[in-house]
Image (cartoon, rainbow, N blue to C red; front, side, top):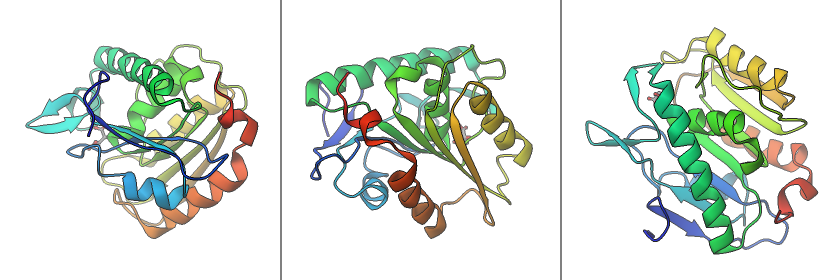
Length: 214
Ligand code: MLT
C-alpha cells in the first residue's frame, strides 16, 4: 500500500513488454487489494494501479457518494471522477506507465464510465463490469474509437437492463467502440466475465493506443 499520491493505492509494475497498464477500480466496500488477482487474470503481466475509493458509506469505501441505491450524487460523481483522473495522471508520471485501461466492478465501473465521459484522454479504454449510467446528462465527450467492454448481468437486481443499455448507448453516441455483453447472471462476477474480458483485451485494444506515454 502506498500513500504518497492523492489516493491510498497499490501499484504492481508490469512484467510483460507491451502489456497495457490496468487501472483497477473496486466495488462498494472493497479496497485496493480486491481486483489485483482479477487484473492479473485478465491481462497477465500488465502494470496494475489500484486506488482505494475515498468516500465512506457506513465505513465502506466507494468512489463517489450516492443518495440511495442506484441514485447518485452527480455533483460528487463529477468532482470525484476529476480527482481520480488527476491521480491517474500523477501516478503515470510517478511510475512511468502509459495510459491505462480501466477495469472496474460495480461502483468502480461507474466511476470509470464517468471518467470516460468527463476526462476521456485519461483512459485508453475500459472494461465495465456491472456498470450503470453515472451521469443522466453527460457532457459532450469525444471517445472516438475508444474500446469499451460492458458486461452486465441479465438478473442483476441492482442494475435494470435498460440502464446498462442506456450507458452503452451514451458511450456509443460519444464515438466509443462499445461491446455490450449480457450474461445469464446477477450482480456478482463469474468466470465468464473473466474469459470475456481476457479475450476482449487481446482483440479490441490496438497496442499503439495503450503503450504510448503521451
Ligand atoms: C453504485 O455505484 O452505487 C453501484 O452501482 C452499486 C454498488 O456499488 O453497490
